[in-house]
Length: 569
Image (cartoon, rainbow, N blue to C red; front, side):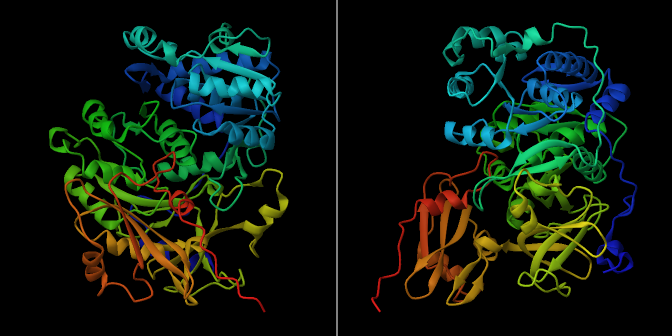
């Protein structure tokens, strides 16, 4: 398909050019430009303690000197085991300034998961805060000889008065015990310098800025090598989608920065636009409406489950959410009913986007000031080509309107998986045009206007009596029933049909339904193959991943391992 044949070009909204120049460079230079152009403006608000971009930049410079004194330089991998906080942003850009690579770690990882990722990534140093639940895991890594150096940041130093005093007074039990060791350094000691250091020489196309580990839903997590050019380009591409005003705008970052969605859209896009980032160390979904009411953010990237929880918040009417102009949903399919309900209650525009760790992550989005198609993941970002390829031969393009594997080409596509050439070869293949095509394992359809709809994950597809059934289609129909708050559909073993759909449902508080009522409602909406054979109701919220995505994998893990009866030959 040549550029003139791209169907999305005729649908691009006014003011955005698909073939716009996409600058790249050192990812650290995003911070440099934010300091130069917006230095005296608020850059970060953490639990009420505010920093200008100049103050953030100064701390980055000083910590970069501290890292240099510890021998951190180009080619080294440094792990961040941090919640959202000033320390995350400071450490992230100081590591990049030294020419080293950031390795993101989920703070809720078990010790075994942390140990595996440290060993796999060859992280030379780990950085965390002195909270017991985090530091004790790092002490264990030191004791076992898994890490060489540990940097501890005082959590209370990041808090404003009187929260810092009250935390020490009432929550001192959450602070880890101190250890004396030449392998342990303190952040506040490492920034006692003049901050005079030079940025390392960076090759944006080749040098890896971040090792971003995949979620592991398809096996052992792998480290996606995201170069400086990948992440810089994706910040530029994503920022082009944001409506602009003359005033400084605010970004509400309730998603964790260690996740690629938040890292790019909440942090790097905010730097690109000189926005103020409002963040908290842990997302409590019941508190989000209060954060919006108090801080008046313009933008809020989130996962569908968070929008759904705001929709049913019992005190929603007492909060003013009118400051929100534009919200991006990602990480999981956005039910149309959730989108429409949130927009009606807040007045914000909610658009669904799409991407994955391997694409830095954003690949498509519904334009906020163009045609916003419910149920669609929108149009390719500038400079991005989306192709629907035959999943069987991995080569033949499907016709518009036909299902196939969603593939991505663009400047945001990763370099490959860290030290996994075979896994890299499975998902990255060179095209006749000479660039790399990323195979996503998602099944999608592109319409004649270039809008893409994800049908399902290849690995989530249910094979019922030899026929393909897609969980997302079933979920969309179930969400049309008024009492549904959350639902997940997955395939479970069936002796007769191989697999059949099962649905897990959480009803809205004070509401209920029966299996028969659900089946009657779905009878005219689903085929017999799609009709859930098993229905399980939950009185508590369904399990979520760390960033709030409904966790199909966790639900399936609770299923009994029913195997086919053994029949001797």
